[in-house]
Length: 227
Image 1 (spheres, rainbow, N blue to C red):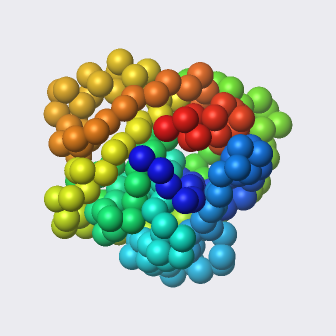
Image 2 (image 1 turned 90 degrees about the horizontal axis):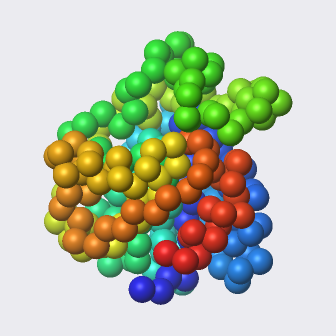
């Protein structure tokens, strides 16, 4: 299934620059990357909502010359899936990195404390272990310094899914800090209802922590071209 562009969506605290190295590798392979700086995550709009982010993703998809592969990382896996729900005829494939889509009615990313209307990066304690194992101390300092507080209206936004045709869109789940076998166990156990209903689902391993766009950009770009 061919596509004309690869739309790249970062998870919490990331702006479009998180994809710089991946985008450079994709361009070397004659792909057209479209890193998106989501509203509220790099544009200074602390009042941005989840609906604003969805609109920005759909604008990127609609601006393409044809169909798009939409790549979502972590929390933005739900955002990528919402794009497939809203534009099933324009999304050629969804790639999910280190996360799974929420179901209709779930909160987008209500995982961390809100402070003065935003969700700041909580430090590294919540990510002890496999998540951050491949980030050295300098990389952790750089990440924390660049992290963009996420507006409460994004984190506490409600996921809405309405079009059953989303299940016809092929999906690839890239497994960084967990294995494809672990992901399959979760799906089989009914913990990921949206992926359990996907008609075309592939699981792909990558040897990295939770942020492979930062630590394994060439390998991640290769995966994105192959899928």
